[in-house]
Image 1 (cartoon, rainbow, N blue to C red):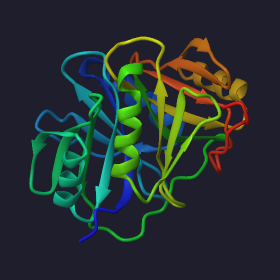
Image 2 (tube, rainbow, N blue to C red):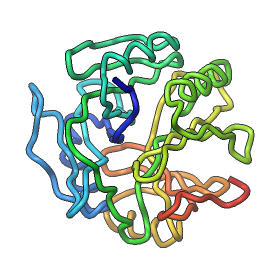
Image 3 (cartoon, rainbow, N blue to C red):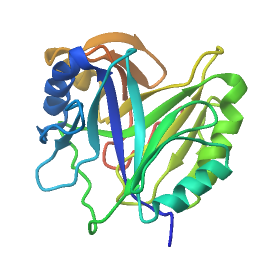
Image 4 (cartoon, rainbow, N blue to C red):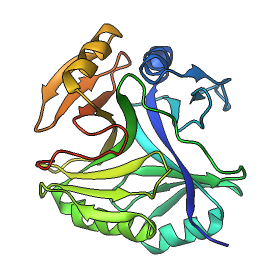
Length: 249
């Protein structure tokens, strides 16, 4: 059996007391509707697009400010878990058809069995597309983390960005979420956030502010925002159809 990734979900982790705010904002941003609630505490929900497969979910967390994590749908969960552990990941929560793991730099991620047919990627909405999870990594852990994700996903393209602090791990055509690894300028715990590709950052920012987001900062080709649930995310100046970035990015 193959450990090939057949689909990827981006998970937003938000405090339980702000769960509803996160859901309301992100369904508006992505033009989706909510699934039924799942989990022992009704803490999971999927954002469902029309005529496409979901690639975004929300989880209510009991402690901390939350963040984001990746969830890989694969043909063979044990093979994927074995490969991840062999590359330095920690198995946090084992189950027969799904598992929670921790990368060498401390980033949680999930894997579950995919039993459906060929998925359909959600479309671009209002000239934006949520297509990337960015891992923010301390300098001392960065190189090892790049090596881990590159080896775990051998069928994905692993390439450095044009800035030395960026590295991309990109899936083949049709899969909805790619990984950006960002080397921080300070030593701290690994975190993750969502990135949206935007045809025009200024237009996207204005729309998101109308929906309740707050501006945080501007970078070289991206704008940092805070959603109504307190979660940070970025609007990036990339082609929402292809994910292509400006040459400086």
